[in-house]
Amino acid sequence: MAVYTEVSDAALGAFLSAYEIGGLLSYKGIAEGVENSNFFLHTTAGSYILTLYEKRVRADDLPFFIGLMEHLSARGLACPQPVRDRAGTALGRLCGRPAAIVSFLEGVSVKAPGVDHCRELGRALARLHAAGADFAMIRENSLSVAAWRPLFEQAEAQADSVSPGLAARTRDDLAVLEAGWPAGLPRGVIHADLFTDNVFFIGDALSGLIDFYFACTDAFAYDLAVCLNAWCFDADGRFDRAMAAALIAGYEAERPLEPAEVAALPILCRGAALRFMLTRLVDWLNVPPGALVKPKDPREYDRRLTFHRQARDARDYGWWG
Ligand SMILES: Nc1ncnc2c1ncn2[C@@H]1O[C@H](COP(=O)(O)OP(=O)(O)O)[C@@H](O)[C@H]1O
Ligand SMILES: N[C@@H](CCOP(=O)(O)O)C(=O)O
Image 1 (spheres, rainbow, N blue to C red):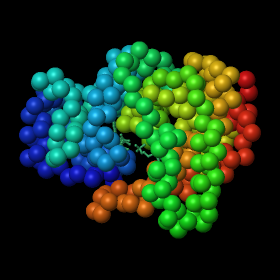
Image 2: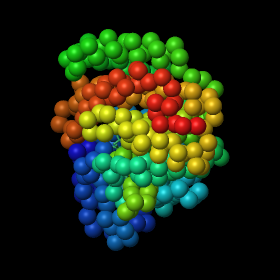
Image 3: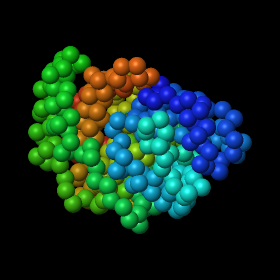
Image 4: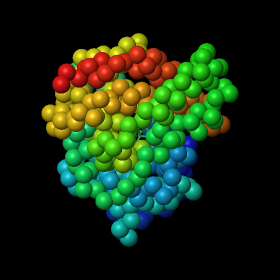
């Protein structure tokens, strides 16, 4: 359960008094998520999500995240809409943390996605990229290639205790990725963390995207690479090319990839896998005492890297041109 900061009834009541969202009927900590503390709020006016921003979220970045959700909602993308208080502010402070209230989205995340889910996801990802095109703010990706070696250095000494040989494998990956990381690809607003738990469906239809707290300005194809990693490996860690083909086809139905993006897909996928392996590894080795959180397993992404290391070109990822 990701609740790093406990919120008392009294503190929440005082915080909510600044908003026009009715009287509080109930609230509870949300079991899913790993980054922030999230609470489900039920008020006389409806349902909302309260987020207290924790560790990896920099306060300076919050105006980007809040502004982006407002921008995307205004363009019809189904994503959380920040709620402003009576003073017109969407960012407050609660229990010593920056905090915001956003609209509640209906839908459920799929644990075992299929081809149709992947096609829908691809379309939604391309629509997100299009809807962000005229968003004025810039946020560089603070978890891109330059951040990976410093992350690894935090965990290097203990890496082999998590998986034998992990330190050496990671050193090799870093050398390849730092030498060959592509520059100059089409870029704009990307989600950068569109895992299955951040995508809601109602029946077979995609109903919303959540969790924009890694969103940034980076290569569109890197976002696709994050999704290929998160959606297209089965429970045993085998890559499912049919799901990947559907994801890419869904994306290309809205926004065809440029040749340079197609050529870069293998290295982008390898880099995306390393990024999640490293943040998971650091978290795995540093669970805060008393935190109600289940860290995610870095070994899942160590296994994905085995696939990416031997991939030759975009066809290995289901792209058929
Ligand atoms: N706007 C929303 N509508 C409905 N549920 C939400 C919303 N935002 C978050 N949640 C719920 O809270 C969980 C954790 O949110 P998330 O933003 O992924 O947290 P974290 O950033 O801590 O990983 C989600 O898996 C979902 O169940
Ligand atoms: N998606 C990341 C962890 C971030 O968690 P989220 O709940 O914010 O998606 C991972 O799987 O490592």
